[in-house]
Image 1 (spheres, rainbow, N blue to C red):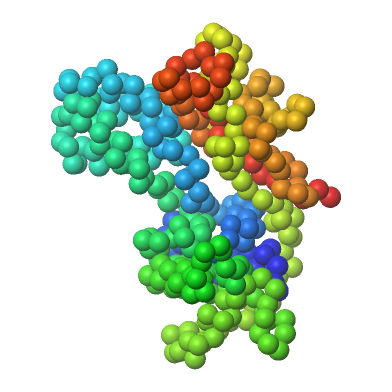
Image 2: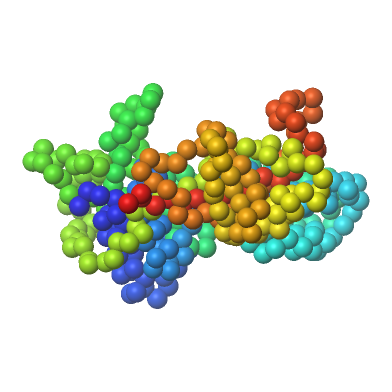
Length: 356
């Protein structure tokens, strides 16, 4: 069938089949790749329902250098620019932060830092290394990775599933072969097994409703290395598989909100400081804007006027994806009314559900 939910069920059914028969299986060595993110939403929803570890390669929405955890290290290093210290001291500073995915990422970085620079270093050396590392850093893969074909470049996995949908779309200024090149990139990420999912054509001409994977897979289907498997959908409960997962862009967040609050004991300032990664959040509409509150009702953020919900959906749940440290650029007026040199901004992850 040509709907994304059915495709997700079939794709994940086959990966679960492999997980059940391969003794060396690890979800952290697998990926599902699509041309467009909308085809990955039901895959994530399926994993959440079934308890399969899953993560999305969309941390580009967050600058790792600006993370609260990274800036905790940077502030400590800034006070020791010319002083020698042991790598263990830096690790102790990091572990003063609560354990979460970002601290885990920085833990890995500190191991690399010591290996490259040595166990003794100055604050200046460490800061320069961290700044360079943060430009290309990515989260450690701990579960099934969902990502776009563009994002998959340069990566490798034991098992890869490539979804159909959107492959016949031609973006502005793209040449006609762009989709084929991207499909090739997605295919060549697999080291052991490659699964290509294809929507059933709905006409004798071979056209389908969602994508053009058929056009790009037809020629090698006769190869001895290819096994064609036709699936029948199980009678799975599809409740919740039509949810959408979204990280707002920074342009959709009022970045100056906390910078305009007076005093370190302001309710919102203390509430943001208390937040941990993964904590649940509440969204409330105030006039023409949405506000973000913690579960005690304290306001921890405001969305920008550019923030809108997908048409036909409402917010089902939200949580803290990251907390970043923001600063007013000297001699600029980017955030009028700001009274702080630096402040924290909450980046939420939002789950949407269809309006019934």
